[in-house]
Image 1 (cartoon, helix red, strand yellow):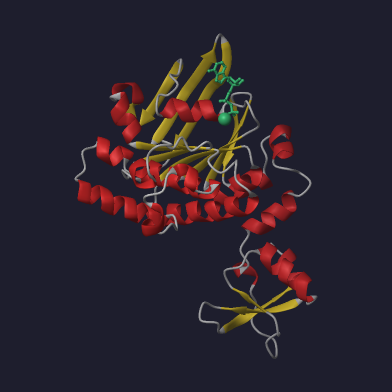
Image 2: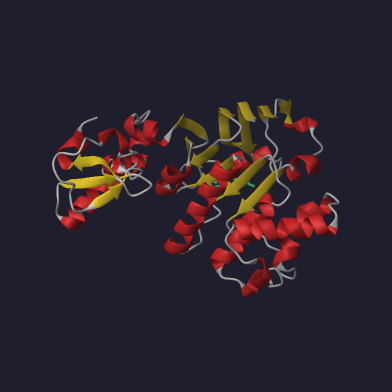
Length: 309
Ligand code: ADP
Ligand code: MG
């Protein structure tokens, strides 16, 4: 969907991005991860030409982005940022309708789309459509920002630290919403963050940047298990990398047949190893019954089995 081929960018002679090669497939949720100043936002802004690259080529659907009309390119890529960029004097509905209106959609279609977007982001259209941005909480503003970015059904969503300014609870809720939206729509999403936990939770693949260079690209588990160098190992948090892996690993391969009566405490077969171990610790037990989606006992899991690969 998007390819960077040996792309570089200089700011006043200083390299911000050096020789970037990265290929993003349709349907990926690729997270650009790295410390502040590593070039994440620059990469994102080069995609929709808010920043022009100096060397190499960027392809969108196989075509050089410089060959697109720039407005057309931007309308095909939703863009959501930390400060939301909502128009303060326009209602929630008018904000979300921005690009559909520019594209000349009929009012009835625009209205239906606004309602759908608000519903998708768990906001009641009746309650929120006519509010102004300042009449919303930070989390709600951010939801409207995401709704606006998605309103015209763009091919790609570009998101630059959209949840960074939110409190942890709101942030976690929005992360789950985004994960669900990605699962349901199959959209290609390019998501920037400096937060390793956010990256591990959301990404299908992570591209790790440092000082304008791509350090490593791979699945969250690949980065945790096989960091490419010391920087990657440090950044991913050597100390609790083991714990982080547990939250990415499913319980399913560790389920064994029932031995005797089912254990009192139960866990879903879709749980992660981290959830399984937490539950064992909470109840001070070493065996749990594993339930399927109909709450029928599938088998059991023992603490000792979890350490097997
Ligand atoms: P990140 O998003 O990872 O924090 P940025 O992409 O914003 O990093 O910035 C990468 C580097 O480019 C930084 O060193 C930053 O200071 C520099 N930079 C970014 N934008 C500009 C600009 N408009 N003018 C000069 N330097 C810039
Ligand atoms: Mg940035």
